[in-house]
Amino acid sequence: MKPIIVVMMAALLAVPVVAQETSDVVSIQIKEGEPGAVPLSLSNEARAAVDRGMTWLLAQQSPEGYWSNAEFPALTGLAVWALAANGSTDQAAIDKGVQYILSCVHEDGSIFREPSEQRKGGGLANYNTAICMVALHAVGKPEFTPVILKARKFIAGTQHMGGDDYRGGMGYDPETGRPYADLSNTYIAYEAMRLTENVEDLRASGDQRADLDWKAAQQFLDKIQNKPEGTNDDNAGGFAYHPNQSQAGTITNEEGEVRFRSYGSMTYAGLLSLIYAEVNRDDPRIQSSFDWAARHWSLDENPGMGQQGLYYFYNVLSKSLAAYGRDQIPLASGGEVNWRNELAKKLVSLQKIDPATGSGYWVNPEGRWWEADPVLVTCYSLLALDVALK
Image (cartoon, rainbow, N blue to C red):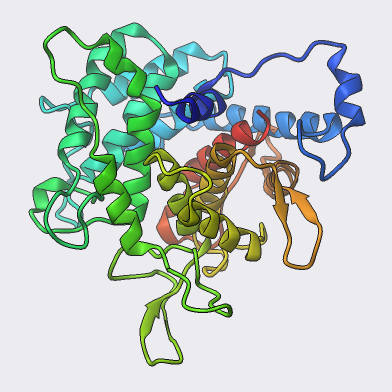
């Protein structure tokens, strides 16, 4: 296992460690904006928000064990992942969620529900499988290993390997038969394969190991990263959605060429994907993507998209910056900001409190990409806080 992947797994899946009494002195001495642990007072506020969020999330579980929508087991997977990562003691709820996920497993290793009506992307097999296999891995019970191993084979088999612009990426559903891959599905699949790769050591002798073609992955990422055109190219280093589209629209440069705009959530997804694809941190592709993120630093919006996809943005931002290994973000106006501190403060401030129970949740008034669903958004927020506080 590569050292950087070990670091990422520890950051994303480790159970929170209870601080010793003597650690208070160390935490208090850390000033706002300095690298290291989140200051004690802010950490306490954030962990209280996490506890409120987990209490609220547990109350939303259906009697059948799923969360939010039975047709999308990824929603249940995100809830199980968030609860396990944050050290929930309600094992019964986690077990019930896991049983629902297991009821969605197909013979080929995929984990999804057949849609009740025809829709673009079909059953979203890649998306649902990737998230659910990470959730099972986060729970950490050995009896789930065979399910995870089969899911890995399924995901590996859906990497698009045609001779077109989508080569190396991942789409929603391989059964559509159309050449298609986007960075959102791709980063989620890459992440799932990296976070679960240690189970390959448990594969039976003679059973072929499952993995992605990471060189092809780099080729796909290269197709959707904006390369520098000049010193004033504001898009340079950022990422679009897929080789032929950006959700943030297009611009026309001085030469009359149409280019896809870079935007926040996909740039952080691109940065994280480059790290998963074993690109060295000093590589210009990673450096330029981090530079774009620093030039457009904001937690008030998903840069380039406003409030659309805001919590997805927080979630992938936390994971990519943790994997990149830098706590300080240089600001265009000068100085630096500690992203862990700022993200913790932002998410604490955005939590909504249920007056009847005192529990808390998050929801995006801008409902694009399902963010009107408080279960989805609360899971994003809990996972982001888990990473920020570690």
